[in-house]
Image 1 (tube, helix red, strand yellow):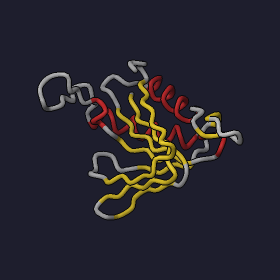
Image 2: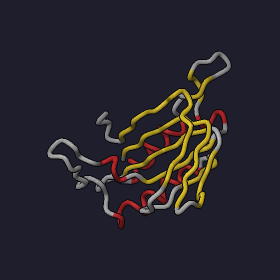
Image 3: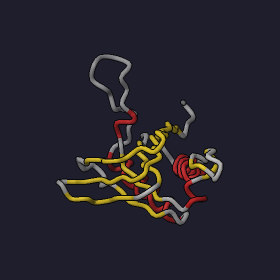
Image 4: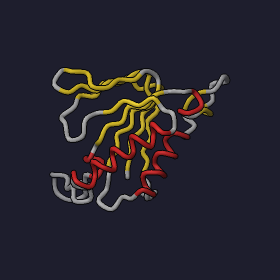
Length: 149
């Protein structure tokens, strides 16, 4: 499982000009699911993201987590995080999980985040979406449950 995590002042997702999810201060998480991801990957990723100390404390140090400050999370499925661009000019997506595997894991990830008391908004799986955000910092992190980076 891979994620691009961005600390934001606010963010929203639109489908066909309709806002389907929005958050104020918090995190936007673009989530990629690999063909062999398991509950272990899902729980590791949820734990890591919710507890990342990337929000400023009273002294301006990144020392607080999403959970510490009661911030929000916008989660968007992003299979292109498994795009392999090493050969040729067209990315290959053979490592990205197909819909029948990825969608239930994506849904379980959302439920895992909600179960931790995080206010959550989402995109729609397999939809063409427009994501609008104001990156705060900017702070952008790449996470991989297999620790490839």
